[in-house]
Length: 212
Image (cartoon, rainbow, N blue to C red; front, top):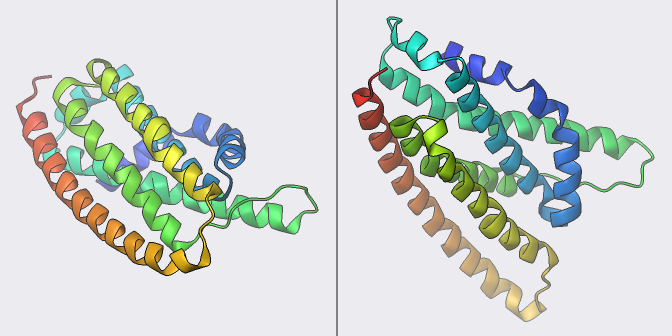
């Protein structure tokens, strides 16, 4: 499984090459939540790059000719999403450190623990939506799902982050909003776990039944 994840990671040269541009755009667009937006977009781009490369090189046929369980291939793909996200967090942290010590008129939001967890949950949720279709239909036939997921990112997640970044709350409302935020976060984590379990079970079932 380690080698499968490493293979996907080593294919990300172009993503890392344009990572600075992505971060700049996300920071300008979403200000204090540009860090979360950058991690989500870059992680999903890395995921699509890995899937596209496997489709182009017929990697599934090669992998299934090896003494390798199909379940292992599925689990590696799910875990790779979090590896991508963590690598983008490290990249962003290094970029933040470099910019903070240089006399540049540039401000980057500091990635907190809460925002890091939020980014992991969101990218995991988006991957859970995409993977069952990918393992059932393959990369080319699941391109419509790619469009839907990107719509969820830019039409749903990003506007919410932007609103949070630009909203100001009266002092008397802050305590109430903190309680509501904790409840919403708990419900989202519960939803995430349910979606993740169902997604993995479907992906395992679909991939076991595919012919190559």
